[in-house]
Every structure is written in C-alpha cells, then in structure tokens.
Length: 353
Image 1 (cartoon, rainbow, N blue to C red):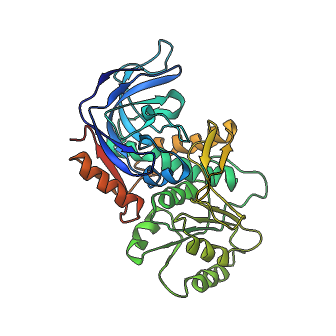
Image 2: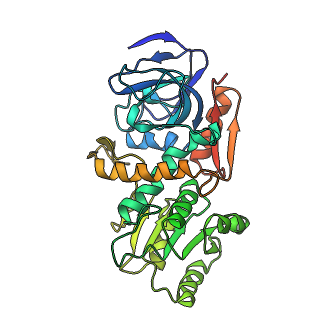
Image 3: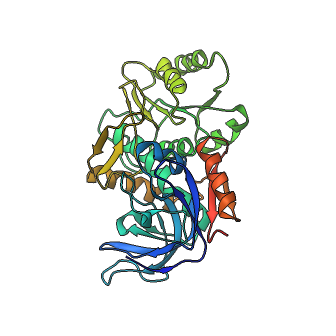
C-alpha cells in the first residue's frame, strides 16, 4: 500500500531491462517485520544494472542504503528517527518498495543495522552488499574463522589469491581476510593501486596487465615456500580472469567468482542468504531457485558487524564518491559503475533532482 507521493526521483528498470527516471514516486508502506526509511544516501553496485539479466526488472533499482527511520512496528528494535543502513532483498518479482535509489524505501528489519556515530553516513551506504559478499566467500565458502576467532585445528587461512584487488569486493575481502589471519595474500590490480592495497593487507601485488602475470604469481608462491594457493577469488567476474585464476590454482584450491562461471569449480558468493531467491539463468528462459541458508546468513552478517565496529581502524573503504544532482545524471553514473569505468564506491545523495 502506498499512501503519499515523495519529492525527488527514483531510478527504475523496465521489463525489457532498460532504465529510466521516475518522478514523484509513491511512498511505500512497510509490512510485518519491515521498517520504512527516508533514504539519505544510496550506494551503487554493478548489480543495479546487471541484475536485469537475471530477470529482476519492473522495479526500482538499488540495494545499499543509509537513511532515517520514518515508520516501525510497535515491537520493532528501532524508533522513528534512528539512523540505519543496510540492504534489501533481490529476486524475480522484487517489489519497488525495496529499491534503494528512491526517496523512501522499505527494508526487512533483519537486513539493517544502526549507523555508529564514527561511520560517515555516505560510507555506511556502501558497506552492506560488498562486505557481505566478501564475508560469504571467506567465512562460508572458504571456511575462514571470523576475526578474533579460532578455526578448527589444521585450518590454514591462506595462501589467498584475490584477482581484482582494487574492486570493492576485493578490497573488502582483503581486509576481512587479514583480520581472520589469512597469509600470505596475493593480489592483482593496476600498478598504481599497489601501494594502497599493501596498506590494506596485501602481502604482494601483481599488475594484471603483465603478459606473464600468471608466471609471476606462481614464482612468488614458490619463493615464499608456503605451498600452493589454497583459496582464490575472481573479484572481477570475467571469463578471462577466471581462466587466469585457475591457471594459478591447484586441484586443492577453493575457487569463488563474483559472477557465474562455466568452470564448475567456481562458487558464487551472495550478499544475502536470508531469504529464498528466484533468478533467471542468463541467456535462457530457465528459472532457478536458491533456497535461504539462515546459518550462512548469520555468519556473513557477523563479518559485516565486525567491519562496521572496526570502521576506520581495521576496515575502511578508501574511495567513496558522493554524487549530488539530477536523477538523469545519477543514472549515467550508475551505468558507469555497471560497466566498470569507476574506482571506489559511488553514492547518490537524496533526494535526486
């Protein structure tokens, strides 16, 4: 149910996957165990555009947000006026009330968190998706211990290879991995990012554009005398990069990629595992259902809680770009993110003109 119209604009994806701007959008009403939030900032992710290929259309775009609580249930843990951040569910049939790129949204209460006073509001708007994606890879798929915890006897949190270390998920994975005791951490990125990445936890960096980069990594692993790469993450999500990752890997290596790969050894991490998700397999009319995994959701959420608690000391996003302007210009910037033409995280300040 929608009872009023909001000032400001929303970014919307049509049924055919094209995007447009909506004006004077309806203010959505929360259902049970949901809260209504006035969006102050929304974070952009490649998924905002890319998820149309998975059948997630006819809806307001965006998942990450930070804002002010405007409506709650009587038994809610929140109160009107609380500052919160979080993300919203995905899947075919996703209602527009969950879209982050609009003046007001509705979010499941268990997908939100209070924003501490020492976390900048714009930064809070970009953390949930990338940190939870990285945490799913590390703590659920790889089986790393959470920061401050001990893993099972004999568990080695490394050697770890992150291909695409300057991507947002790569940066999050590097810092969470370091906090979990991963060592060594080998990273590929443009050479101009190497100094920054070493400061965030990389043990050794390699330029992905070098023609012999695979050989360089193999030699570094041999020189370090740490055994084979046991964990490898393709954080770019392209087939070419995935092939290079497998060229470095051994038959012992656990592999993840931020996008589905033909090589069945790769698993794809998800930012949320708290609800069933229905998606269309790209390039087909086939629909697949991914069942909720509450225990894994709890584990990845602990990773997010650690990042929020330690923001500015043990964890940070080094580049957050705040956009303020028209919705049309914002849509162009969101497209740039989807096409990989940006570094760091883009944040939209609301309301959009």
